[in-house]
Image (cartoon, rainbow, N blue to C red; front, side, top):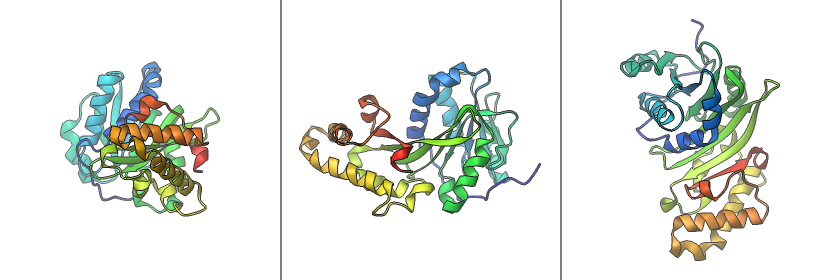
Length: 263
């Protein structure tokens, strides 16, 4: 086998850490995965423990389709060996990197807390390398979350008919009861954005607009953090901030923006 593309990362992980990302993935891709003849979802860089790959398989089987196969990919051979006891017909673990060394094309690649540990200059090439393994219409999720999964931010990239991988969305998901202001998620911005959270940059402008809306909706705080968050997003959208979802997602502490707002 050719040398895997990438380097060994810290491998920090924990049970239930990626629940917010998985919930959004299921909502976003349920129909497409059910229509697929051979749905394959990759958990790239699952870390020192295979628990998040196992959880992903369980959630996909429960809420989407029991035909889905999940492949956990790690560049560290010791982590791959340690994961083998969890392997079965619908969950496997192999050594690899951004080249995603599986047979055929895959439906979804989830790469959480992986590119955060690389230089920003490495991101575009990593995206393109992973994109070659996606089927047309396939989804790549690149993002970052905190250690217990209370705050997460990720980019959704789609494989187009022309074969290009295009960033389409930015999603924020947070535990509302511990949120002081929307920009608290800034330390969890994916690598492609985190160094651009400075005055004059689009991502800084977006977070500033959300903070302003949050302050203007402070009168809703007595009704709970969820209601204040919903009113914040209502105010922001009424004042020109475009979103791609509705209150049904906002109630979960989640909001998705078109990529053009931050690109």
